[in-house]
Amino acid sequence: MNKKSFFAISLIFVVLAGFSFQCGKKKKIEESIETGKNIYEANCSPCHGINGEGDGPGAAALNPKPRNYKKDGFKYGSSIEEVKRTISEGIEGTAMPTWAEVLTDDQITHVAEYVKSLAASSAE
Ligand code: HEC
Image (cartoon, rainbow, N blue to C red; front, side):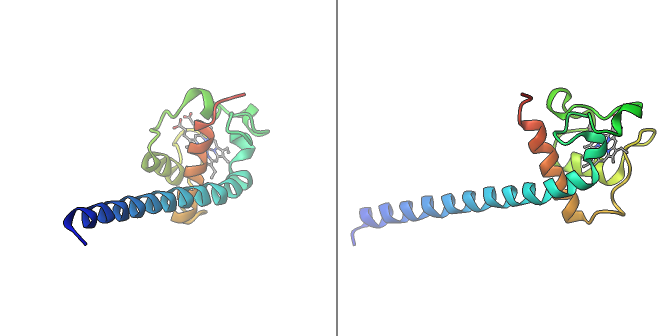
């Protein structure tokens, strides 16, 4: 094998490896969102609404009300770390409870991914 074809083959190999790594990462986030959806529907939708629009059956009586993730964005930060922190610590002075003792760290990660996916999907 000459130098040139060795280089070409290595390059293909690196590109393929990078591609499958990206796919793996994407798949992992998709699985996380799927798990998070179940956690969300069981624990969060009564206040936040099934679509994250802040219109769950429990929301009417709340002040402040949960926001519409699709329209209003995140007051307490929208990075995955910030959303996780909001979920685990709750928000003092509002109905938003602390979840750190109810959900595991992994579950909080999943539900945070799901909340972010709700915010990313535009309102109909
Ligand atoms: C008892 C009602 C209630 C439940 C249950 C509840 N929340 Fe909340 N949540 C609220 C309220 C009210 C706010 C708004 C507080 C504010 O705007 O200051 C809020 C705010 C938030 C925020 C911050 C949004 C921002 O602006 O940064 C996130 C994220 C969040 N909730 C996620 C969750 C998740 C995930 C669950 C389920 C594990 C959950 N909440 C369950 C009432 C609730």
